[in-house]
Image (cartoon, rainbow, N blue to C red):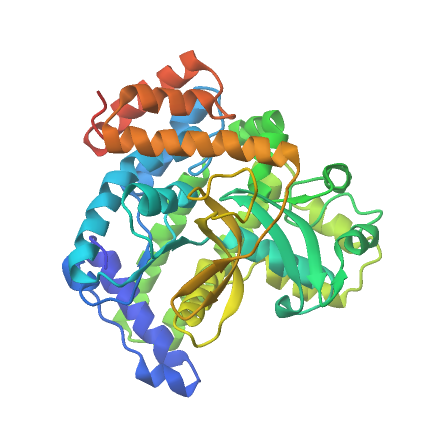
Length: 441
């Protein structure tokens, strides 16, 4: 379902071409329907996979540029940009869940929409849709990279992950009865940085944890900001050009009804997007696009690992791969442990039971059982509590149309941290987004 007729038609045709290209016999049982009517899309659904951006890519670009102009990190999910996106998104989420309660009351809501932690939290706590979980491809990619470094399959290793969305850490790597966390760090001796990963290995050893790449914004705040400011365009501007080019190419190819070419176009697009995402992690954030990869491969690692590492970093499945695993598990077809956004319910001591966290959970037919994480480092818990307080204030501001709570939320976020700056950002976002922004009193 999409509101934009052209992109709906082109992606619908792409979906049909993709299905027909699959070799497994089950693909013949699937079909694609598309509509611009939300109620038609929701009626009798078992799963609702949600991704939307109120205001489109233009709004994302405004979020990024407004933050950078004010001298803070311009990123659509973290800090000021994520705050603006959340306030625009939550009224639409409330409307969606109201419709779901009538049209598909037993459905699972699988949230892709950013900022995923806030959206999932609001769905479960503010709008009371208990069959909700949020997914993100960042832990999935970390898991894939670690498996590639250890020359193992993903299913053979299980990272011990905890945190919030875009604010998480790995503190163990289990393979059977063994913990390979320290052996992995020892194996990386002499390597300054992992390919496509922004943190110096010395910092990881100091931390004693492998942080989600988004924590670079917190741990290397000045470097990240300076490098974002040095770019000629924001990530939103870059992706807008790529998306326009993709739709134009799909339109030309669809006229020829060449299904193989349609699928190849999209595969190439996904690979390119992932490659530039990796270079954003090691380029827009750190200012170094290529030395990570070269340094890594020139420090005694077998050349045969190169392909596995590249595949892990540019995995075309991305969100779709995570979603497929979630759907397989919740339908009962293939139960598995997956890192998701879900209410804490005692998994991490010190975090409220209904606070949504990002942790491994065992998914089976219509069941989500969080894995007990136990105590976590105090510095991680402290940062999580601060960001969780920001998230809850942001949700409350949207639900209560409260200017005071919105201002307080932005003020306490670690990447803003100043009341005068928060007020300036809030006023600018209200001005920039006009009717897209909720009325705050």
